[in-house]
Every structure is written in structure tokens, then in C-alpha cells.
Image (cartoon, rainbow, N blue to C red; front, side, top):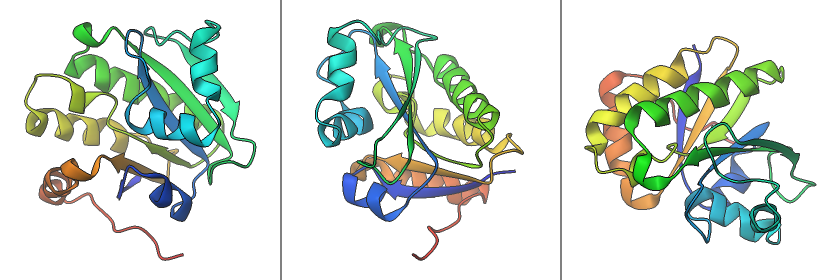
Length: 175
């Protein structure tokens, strides 16, 4: 069972909480990139935006791009996963994309990943009902030792409470 950790979704927190793979998500019909992907795009000088402009990446469901961060992030690899059209995104799709990401990361033979909420903060379903399922999906991978959830600052307290209720949160390790 993976240890889940929670950090704010900002570049400073990513810098202070290194990992092996940073999982980013993007909707196929939402530009500019938002959330964690938008922050990382800025850090990597618009590389992700360039992928979408050239159609190297589309953001459609099952679209995956694994790319080295080239030293610009504290994670050597970035994995971009498409979520499909924003209007069609649902809780079950978010959970499936989280499972897909964890499978890809585990298949790479690494034990640590950092990810966002797989678009759960962007759907109309009650956030408090969809996060426990995400926690369950992420915790189901024995090959992963550490999963760090990077959450938008306004949602940290809510996610922290939900994780505390399930007894699965661990504070970030000291540097």
C-alpha cells in the first residue's frame, strides 16, 4: 500500500518534495493549460503548450506522453495523461485515469509519483464524495511506495480532512 502525502500545488512545493514521476493531466478542449499542468508548462518554457499546438499531445482519453523534465523539475520524468473533453469528465473517468497513471508509473519500475486530483476538482459532482474513491484507487498499488497529491491551496483543508478520516495521510518527509 502506497503512502499518500499532501502538498500545495505550486512550484515551490514541487521543488521541496522531489519524486520520480510527475503526473500531469489535461482536458482535450481546455487551453491554456490550468492547474498543475499550467504551472509545469511555465517552468518548462511552454513545452507542454507546444505539444498541443503541434498535436503531439491532444488531451484525449488514453493520450499519454512520457518525457524527461531535463532538470527543470525535482522529478526526472513527466507523464501527461489526457482526460478528454471537460464536459464529459466524470468521477469514474478520473478514477480510471488515476489507475492508468499508477499502472504506467509502476510499470516504469519506479516507486514514487506526484499527481493532482485527475480533474475531480473540475466536475460538478460533490468533491467530498469523489476524493475517497481516488484515495482508494491510489492506495491499491503495492508497487508504489509514495504518492504525493499536489492540491490547489483552497482545497487542501478539505482533502486533508477526507484523508484524515480515512486514516491514510502521512505528513511530507523532512528534507
